[in-house]
Length: 245
Image (tube, rainbow, N blue to C red; front, top):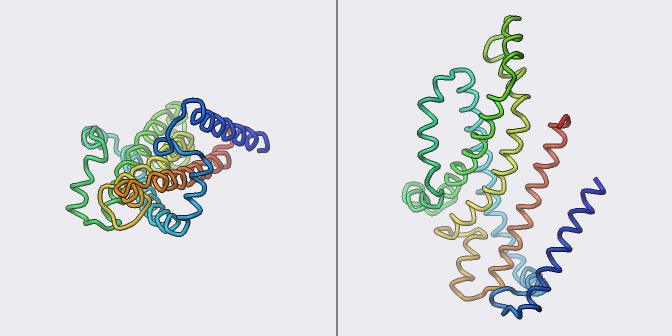
């Protein structure tokens, strides 16, 4: 654990040195790439509104992520129990997700309004697809010989799914969750930029309109830290649940 923390700290230090070095070496104007100290100062000055925005964004991302995960796993379980469902479901899933999620935001705003529901729907769609694809691949990768052995002992499809397919798919599910949690924050912020009363996306949109680029970078920094912490939480869960990797 200490070694991992040391590598993370080293990586952040390298990023900081490259960032500051690029600013001085190429004389990049502050309105394009401000210094890390200036960004930290902007976070401190705007701390209260940034935290309110972060809470709103985390709510949208969290609810959408959770709902998308539950629906995705339920669909995978349905396919495992009734494989014929996949033939009818997959074309629809692929068709919906072949279009960038942001393209659905105007439609979502019309249907659900400018409140959190429209953003949650977008996060659900994006995060759910990621978890669904990874979980389905993991469930299918289970050794067929082991499945046949369980069936020979009288295990039905549901018991096979619980005892074999779910544990076997767990590494793929956790990988999907790790990708989806970061994607959830990204989708939530973009959706908030296109139409919202609050959230980090709204702060970024307003600051851009006011040509306050330091506040834009401050909101980006807060969103990045939050995303890294959420990703780190999923990595920790991965280590605890999938200990045999």
